[in-house]
Length: 229
Image 1 (spheres, one colour):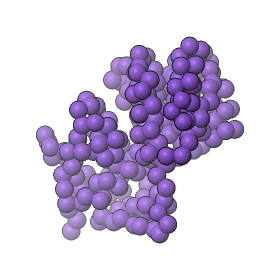
Image 2 (cartoon, helix red, strand yellow):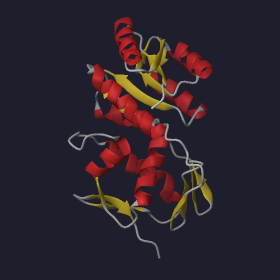
Image 3 (cartoon, rainbow, N blue to C red):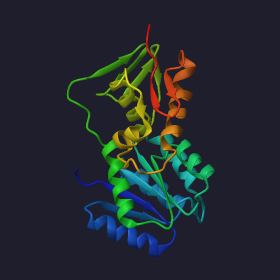
């Protein structure tokens, strides 16, 4: 993977310094900001590939920063890195468009691994020839990273797109949570995470209003696409 620019938004200088040194050692190009205002200005000027985002900042919250940046750039990857570990905070961060959520205290090697996993998903180059996957009235174009249902565009985040793509590539299978964690998030299957359930619910919210329910839950097994007539 070519070098990627990572914007570290962290108001504790000691933590910011450790992250900056570690990311640079691993071949990434770090930038740092200590406030919401600095983060937004740097993100707009430097256009990083990923933002490593604290939640509690001196002049606001990481939620606000994520919301503003997501409105401007759907291709920007966001990982929350925060001491707020309540399940409502995790789900709230993912709902805002976060691609991952890491709680403090953290292991720096894990942070690097999670950054690389997110970048693999969000920086996958488009194939030279358009490849369109279809399932019923859903069309997913792997070349342009666009999705349409019943002819209407569906706005998905990079993670939502990759999850739907994996489901559409396996239309006649029920995919287990462990497989989805490995294939979509590059997580080890032993990781305990509610991220799959969360993103399945996001896809349903965006796809189901445009047609019949698309994603099937096989309780105790996993998820798949419903058959088409």
